[in-house]
Image (cartoon, rainbow, N blue to C red; front, side):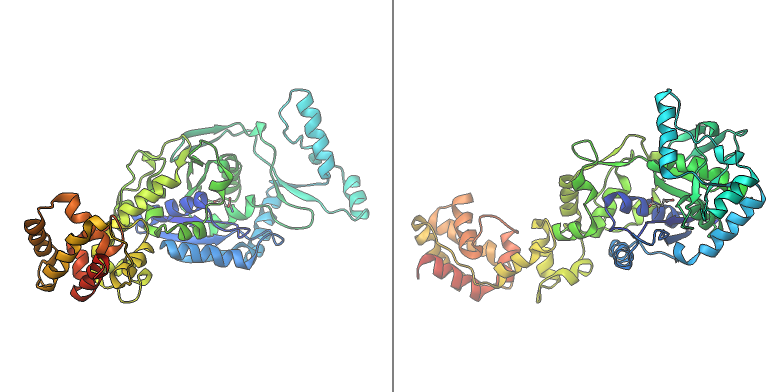
Amino acid sequence: MDVITRFAPSPTGTLHVGNIRTALHNWLWAKRHGGRFILRLDDTDKERSREEYADSIKADLQWLGLDWDEEHRQSQRFHRYEEALDRLREAGRVYPCYETAQELDLKRKVQLSRGKPPVYDRAALDLTDADFVRYENEGRQPHWRFKLDHSKAIEWHDGIRGPQHFDPALLSDPVIRREDGSWLYMLPSVVDDIDMGVTHVVRGEDHVTNTGLQLQMFEALGAPVPAFAHEALLVGSEGKLSKRLGSLGVEAMRETGIEPMALIAKLARIGTSQPVEAVTTPQPLIAHFCFDTFGRAPARFDMEELESLNARIIHQLDFDQVADGLPNGMDRAGWEVVRPNLHTVAEAADWWHIVEGPVTVTADPADTDLLAAAVAVADGTDWTDGPWQALTSALKAQTGRTGKALFLPLRRALTGRDSGPEMGALVKLIGKERSIQRLKAAAGL
Ligand code: GLU
């Protein structure tokens, strides 16, 4: 079987970590099986869907490297939904209803006050021809409901949640089309999944009940039912879906200096029994991706953990993977020297400024003699080989200083910082001339 998955965002907002995770899992599953990954924009809601959101969703997926093989828009497929509705009507599986929102609300309240589940009572099925004529004369348009088959339990084996069971009699017949002719999400999604040959539907567990209802729609349309996997939701580190988490979009990630690969590595494994690993390509994530490893408890997303993973990944990234984000003039050697000290790729520029200078230092007067000696030693040192080694061993012999007392004043004079990349590699990048200038300045010469 060729695996086909889809990511179906509504272009009514930008992507956040929760839906990026869903996109990623669909992508990983398709890649793992050499299958296809579809991007479907669920834009049936004309009022709320915006082109700028569609563009931003696509740009974000591209930034993350989640390439798609096909792109569809529900707004271009209304004719298919009409056809499906016609078929369901002929089969007696949809029916028109005329209740207003207030009437339905009242029914629900009465049911609840009697301790009954608020399930639609199917009153519209009892409408007579005279009722229909009357409504028509009043110019009223119906909304349409899908008629669930109460004789058949709804069951499926969920890829993450295991065996699922619903009694259809305890569910309301879902509204699939509004009186103004607009479509709700339920039926178009099924029609698309059928037409596009979707084999696996991976989405959040907030869709579990929808799946129960949609299973009967697949069957009523005579189509094979795809496999379903519903993932536990993502929660913030404080244990509940926080506003902040909901607003953690790609833009915020980029601003924080999170690399796409770090987000991918985190979201691929969070909430599973597999460890989050600092990988630099998606290949190992693809190779080991498996729904069996997913837990049912909400997955906890922690920004600090992501930042530390980000740093671990950056420490391994090759020059070619980051070249676009590096300052002018920084080459492979420069990248490899500063890389172990970075939390974000952008910080490479700070170190590059230090290499290129100018660097201003105020040295401790107690170190003036050491730094003056350093100027003389540096002057006679060959910089092509190991200048730092040569410099420090000569100064150690001359001054008797060792360890921090020796290294810290030199590091401060040469970089203006107390810590940073390994000095041996750094002084080579700074070069002989600039090193001597800085030592002189620090020694007050
Ligand atoms: N547009 C729906 C959503 O964003 C798609 C759900 C699905 O994957 O079927 O929730």
